[in-house]
Every structure is written in C-alpha cells, then in structure tokens.
Image (tube, rainbow, N blue to C red; front, side):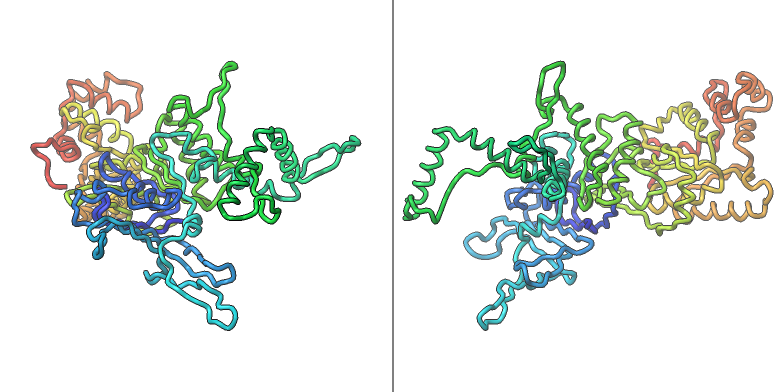
Length: 561
C-alpha cells in the first residue's frame, strides 16, 4: 500500500496542488518554497494517534490567512483500502481520504470552523456499508460510511521523522514510530508456538516450553511478588466501590475486577534506550541532538534490515548532522527501504537525489500564487535510464538544485569557466548557478531533455568539431543542428566554432598563450586550462563572458528566464 497522490487546497503556501507520489519521492527546492508544507499536509491528516481534530488546524494554516477560504486535503491510496464494519460483511474499497476544514453553514454553530472527514470510493462518493446482518427475517441494513473509522485509519501506518530528531518520538511507546513497527513484528512472532525456550521442572528435567507461555508464567510470578497487603486492599476497595455504584453485590462471583499483568506488547512499548558511558547510565532521550539523530538513523537502518514493509515514511532533511559519505550511505538505505515501503522526504543535498532516478524527484517552486511542483514530463524510458546510470556522478545531481544550469562536454569547461567567472566578479554559487559536465558531447541531448522536463533554465556549450564524432562528421552536423534546435524550447545554446583551447588561444594571442602554457607544464589539459583561466595575464574571451553573464546575471541586467 502506498500514497498514490495528494491534492491540497489552501493549506499554508499550497493554494492549489495536485501531485503523483512515487514509491521513493525526493522533494527538492529552495528554503521557503513549501517543501515542508507538503509533508506537513500529509502528516497533519494521517499521523495523529486519534485522527485529526478541528483544533489541529488554525487560521494561520489557511492560505494567506484568508478567513473566506477552506482547507481541503485529499490522499489517494494504491491499492485501495478495504473496510467492513461487520466481520462477515463484504468489504468496500476506499480509494481516498478527504479532509475539509470549513465552517458550519447553518444552525447555532454557523460560521464556526469544523473538520469534516470522508472515506471515498473510486467514484469520489461515500460507500455504502452493511451495518446490520438483518437476522430473524429482517433484511440486512446498509448505510453510507460516515467519517474515517479509527480501525480504517490504522491500516495506513505512517511514520514521521521531523527535523528535531527527537528520539522520544521513535521509541516503541510512540504509536507512529519506527521501533513500534519493528516490535509489532517481533511481538507477532513471539506468539508463534514454535518459539520455545528450555526450562527445568522441579525434578531438574529440561524441557521445551512456548516462549509466550514462559513469559506469562514469569510475569504472573512478578505480579504475585508485587501483591503486597496494600496492593490487595486497593484492588478489593476499587472492586467493591465500583460494583456498589452499579448496584451489584460486591461479594458475587459473576463479575470480577482486578489488575492484570502486562501483555507482551505492553512490555515492549515500555522499553527505553539506555546509554552506559563509563558506568553512568542515562536515557538516550536525554543526550544531545547529534547523538539522538545518530540513534534515529540507526533505527532507520535496522528497520530496513528487518525488511519491515507496508509503511509510509515521511522524513525531513535526512542529511542532517551527516558527513557526505554517510549521506550517500543513508541514501542507499532509503532506496532499499523504498522497495517494500513508501519513502517521501525533503532534502537540500545532492547526495539524496540521483539523475537516473529523475522520476522520483519533485522540484518545488514558489511564485505569487503560492507553491507549485514540477515533475519530469519525460517518460520512464529504460534505455535512457541505463544511459544515465552509465554516466552516474553525484556532482551531476546538483542540476536538480540549480536556478540556472549550464551543460558542458567535459572537465575542461567545468573547471575553467568558474575561474573566468571569478575574473568577472561573478559568484556562481551565490547565484545558484551550476555547471554540469555530461561526460561527452553525445550526452548533451539526454541531459538537456532532462533539464527541460523540469523547467530548469538551461544553457548548452558545445564544440562544433568534437572528438566524439571523429569518424563521422556528417552525423555530427546533424547532431549540432539538433542541439541548436533546443533554442525552440527556451534553451540558450552556444556553439564554439573552434575547440575550447583554440577560443582561449585566440583571446590571449599566440605569443601570450604560449607564455601562459609554459607556466604550467606537465599537467592534464583540464588542469592547465583552469590555471590559465585563473592567471591575471589571461583576458576573458568575449564568448565566455556572454555565457557566464547569462548563467549568473547581475540583478540590474537579469532578464526573464
């Protein structure tokens, strides 16, 4: 089961939003664009233990705080959920939940806010369910399903890991936690009769006994130990007074009332994580945020290792407190968890997105009409994906975070152009501009199509004559025409009539260029060109200045994208 789609109206920055949610979903965008509001819309209506209430929403949650607007959040599931009120009745299919924060229209509460919850079928209607079997000759009774019953809500196991990384929210005692899900599985297997332990009887003979039976024996022994005279008097007093209030005979044996020992799941839910540091024991919930974050992520990995399935995980900024290597490792964990669970997360890190998995990325932007989401329009093409996997490079994932993107053939351009930008007093990082080398001229097409599909303002720089087409210049001419045609899609395309090095040579002059080249002997071409670009004696080629001015326009010269 997964959350197939989300539709939101007038919630915080989300005026109108409808998105499809993949199995693993990376939500990417700048600060204050509305990423967290998307996760919060899901969490607000699906995560609360007893279901959302009117008081869970406030006027501050309404778009632009406009009191005339109503919030509407609709979650669609795949496959549909099944629900029956009566055990023997045929189940009905529930495709979506709808939540509406509006106002009473009539009656004494007219104008007061309320939260209306609905379970809907594929037709968007409230299904009719059997509410009575109709025994003794009476026909079965059917009624529309009102609201979202708690046992139906419980079939949507949503787990939220926020930015505060509070371990307390992930302990077994928390209803919607990772450890709760893991221990539910452990508890289920504990009750398997095949789970046995060896015990000795009074004669000293060893025998196998079901683990759950042995637990019940031991917990009963523990409770008997706790039954002091004061305990027994308290239990008798409560029983006597309760039965008297009901007008029943306190000495009757028909009704009993007593304290019962813990059940196995109750025992698991009471567990805490303790850190013993040089003989000093402390709850892990009392240590610093960094340590708590490490434990929460360790639990996340344990969740994956136990192969728990069917949950929906919402994670805010999984990269928090992590070095790049650990970010890459955790991303692999999330992908594995996503094989059997749905994982939806926000991120600012290129280590948590992957170019080949572009269908799993949602770009979040915000304009005067609120937050909107861009999902790639490129079809899921296995051939394209395999080609992108071949060119997989974490640095290329930065394209998803770019305000403007420049695609170049190789390392020479990638290393040199930032040095020319510095010479023009252009800060590419501050401008949110990214230069991505695509691993050869032949790959420019695929990366350009990907960037266009995400509506990222894109530029392309290519050599008219490239070694990629050394043996087929006719094919290269056709390819060049294709690259130039991207301008029809709003892409800026620059063709270098000469190779990159020849453009630099022409701008410097032959004598000056030779002197510059002799300063940096014995280096690779990309490194030498970078050092030449950074040299104070190297003038900036006019074509490079045009490219860089587009890539990171100054405020006074910035044009519409």
